[in-house]
Amino acid sequence: MDRRAFLRGAAAAALFGAAGTAMSARPAAADPVWSNLFRDWVPEIFAPLPDPPEHSPAIVIGSGFGASVTALRLAQAGVANTVLERGSQWPNDPWREIFTGDDLPDGRGFWHRTSFTGVTKVPMQCASFGGVLDCTTYPGIDVWRAAAVGGGSVIFTGAMVAPERRFFDHIFGGVVDYGELDRVYYPRVRDMLRLNPIPSDIYASKPFTHSRAWDDQVRKAGYQPLPNDSVFNWDILRAELAGTTRASATVARSNLGNSNGAKFDLNQNYLKYARETGKSAIFPGHRVDAIAQEAGGRFAVTVTKLSPTGESLGVRTLTCDRLFLGAGSIGTSELLVRAQATGTLPKLNEHIGDGWGTNGDVVLARGASAVGGFGQGVPSASRIFDERAVPVTLENWYIPGIPFETGALASLGMVLDPARTRFGYDRAANTVALSWSARNREETTAAARAVDRRVAEAADALVEYGALGYDANALFTAHPLGGAVLGKATDGYGRVHGHPGLYVMDGAAIPGSTGTVNPSLTITALAERNIEAIIREGR
Image (cartoon, rainbow, N blue to C red; front, top):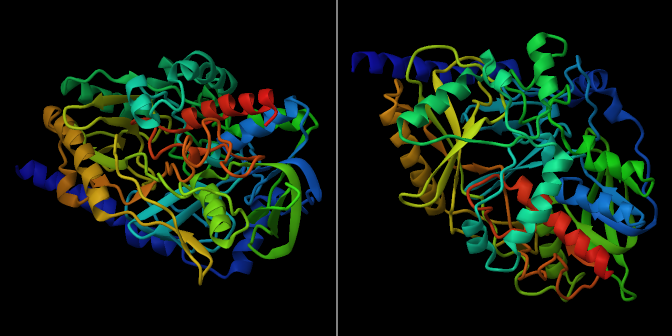
């Protein structure tokens, strides 16, 4: 017990003693000073922004998983399309630090915020800038989403896993045929994104000591770890290990981007291929503020052109014949809820704004079984599944935001959580928002914590992170889902009821959960399925 008490104290000092250091190392600074630094570090995002055409046959709002699929498949079908993205087009470079890290982040990390508290619960400060992660705070929940060309593919941890059929069918209620996804669309996405589990040589390397320790612990608890497919480019990780590119994915870089292109993100596949057709043009720095349908059937899209530092460079109204919403669960739902409330899309039905959930996200940490360094390799090697109470998946994870060893082994938990909420509209402020109850957080936390503690007890973990208040954090979600659900706000293929030519192509279409796995594979596969039907049927 004395040894455990000592280790608890050491871990507490390591985890929470970092707060003062991190905050003083990145104080909020005058925007002009930091803006000049950002201009020096990443001059590409300060290049003059082109203007989109006044009218397009199709406009795609957003550039994440669903939007990028839509842009490519429309272009391949000969439909010229304009992609509007509020964030910047960030480059990659094997040696420059394009993106910041989340241990001591600066404004490149966050979308116009001066403070951020991540999964470590350690507050960080930075200068306001148009960085890649938008952390939107609602009552009871922080929602993390992307603000960059490539959307969530730039900032996620790379795991892409299909749910079990029984959970998928439970969530979608027969609206989507799982067998069709399993036969056609999941394989198509896996091929496009070159998905593969972590190779044995990388798994055996020092940065992934934590992955091997995690797997050893879960085996002691009677679980068999399952390999996770990942979007990472393993050759770039090998180059990091060999020292022929700047280290990134092997040193805890992921949540705020990989400077060397270690993630095979959408800029390297779907969006690249869409551009190469000559039929799809992507316009960074264009925030969509409102959408409407005109009397003749065309859609009007109000956009603000933004500099990377946040200044408005002008407001325009663009038109299109067909409008595809791919701004993510929050962005798409905000546009639809506001349009319904203000009467610019008056025929939207009563399901707009419904069915929002967090995918049951919980971040956890447990102690190691032996004292030693663990490394900070990012790609998730494996996961376990437990349904003794409610269905829960735990994925092996690194510790984001901590630049030194803590003696912790981290997991991302995803609970099959029935809790849902609805977006509301504040007419006086013209804002769309939601709230998440403490009960919802507590129930998902308890379910994930129970599995993690079972592992810790079986593995004789040295540090009791529950005593530190760090063993579970459900105050945020990186997987927002719902708000315009398939089969309710839309038909079974994303066609919005009441407004022909309007489509939902992203995570807003998913009813709050993808069945205890990361949503990105299912979002992408559904977009492939839906756009194929839309193109085939001409509507």
